[in-house]
Image (cartoon, rainbow, N blue to C red; front, top):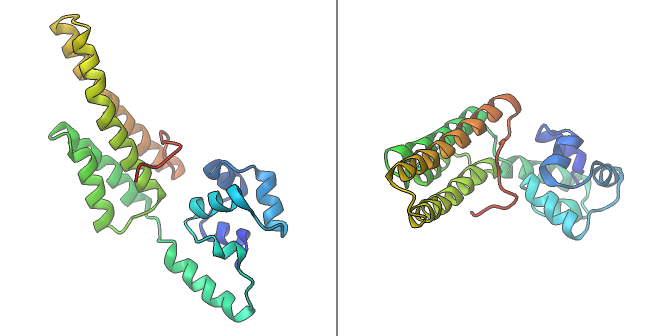
Length: 188
């Protein structure tokens, strides 16, 4: 059976990075790597974070099936190309031309570039949330009736907030291969 350590190393993660990404303590990760099987929340969280089925942690396997499991693991964990992830993130900026493109462009690019992973789901989820919140904030600003200047400043602020969000995530993808601003949940 592939161990958590083997799976973690295949995905080029340290124990600390896995802990940060999953929200599970480093000590718990160390216990699991030492042989304690994960249960409940920990099992589901590690499975989701590492993008592998829970059965990889639970199955009793013989040496022959270890090779098969490693092959399945390689197939299921698509190679993450961070330059493509960055392109998918930057494609959200097309909302300036047409607002729905901040969701459609990254969605289509992730499909065509074969980058369906947790990072692209987070990028799209953040854009969906922004698309929901932006009109609400704008309408609240209009209802306050503070004048045309305020409305113009509010519109510019809403647009700039998404541009800044996209650029911050792009710079973090460059530096640390992760997103700077992400949700604790996935809308997709």
